[in-house]
Amino acid sequence: MDKTDKKPPSQRKAQADASPAPARAKLEHVARLAKVSLATASRAINQPEIVRPEIRERVLHAVEMLDYTPDRMAKALSSGRTHTVGAVVPTLGNAIFADGVEALEARLGARGYTLILSHSQYDPAREFRQIRGMLEYGVDGLVLVGDTFAPDSLPLIRHHRTPLVTTYVCASRQGIPAIGIDNRQATHRMARYLLELGHREFAVIANTGLPNDRSQARLDGLLDAIAEEGIRLPPDRIFEAPLPSIAAGREAFRRLRAAHPGVTAFLCTTDAMAVGAVAEARREGIRVPEDVSITGFDDVEIAAETDPPLTTVKVPAAEIGAIAADRLIGIIEGGPAATIAPIAPLEAALVVRGSTGPVAGPVARKRRTRAAAA
Image (cartoon, rainbow, N blue to C red):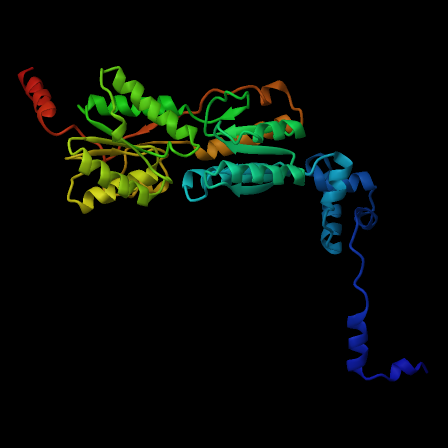
């Protein structure tokens, strides 16, 4: 009898536990167990829609039995692609970017791509480092925000010949495919609405001091609209927030109201800052919209929950994210021209709620008098 048979059970178990783990399953093991060719096994995993259901089920059963995980590095070497996409957004603290990223990731995942995400905190140098790291990793494409980047970013991307789309703007001076809204036109529409309510004294809470071309375009839209009425906005009525936050909106409203008590309409370039402005107005006993009107931009979830609810502009973030994914994959995979052709600006609807109303004071009284006489 073999002497090893006389070892106590505890020693035999320890010996078994110390034995080497089985080798990682490979695609050929899956093919052998499923009784199909290597090519068929690969198609069943990567393009299941083109494989007969009974074959697909056999392959997927083998994958489960063997605990098979595709070797992405081997796949990348054979195809020349990593099936990863990098995205850099300014912040995840603003729901408008979080919503867009969620839709982007879902659409990429449905097409077999993995998203690598970073946020720059509106810092161009940090954004450049993040882009460089993604390019070094070998991403198949990049999704960025806006049309203003660190000086070296675009040359580096072009050197790597990496497909790129940008988002939340509808056009790019750099020749980059752009998916978004016309920020300038959207705020022009908002300003026209306020002008129709009788407002002539404006202030703006923006974050144009950051590398944020969307906020600048929104400010320009207001300036265009009021200029059409012969109104000029003094520079000291523009508050440039360090970050587009609720706290920044509070501080901006407090300072602007103290310096310019005659202002009747406050336009904020994000909902977060508008929420802060409304909160500060309430704290100071200023009625919204009876004393002042306050508007936001984005139409994130909290915009409808403030007291009063915010008048704002709806940015279709989920649509932007999904279209960006489709457009980028079309470029990566060299799809038909229709999938990579320029697209028109997406709709940015004006959402009128309770934070805006007719201007109080002589202008409003004059309008009411004219209406009564008619």
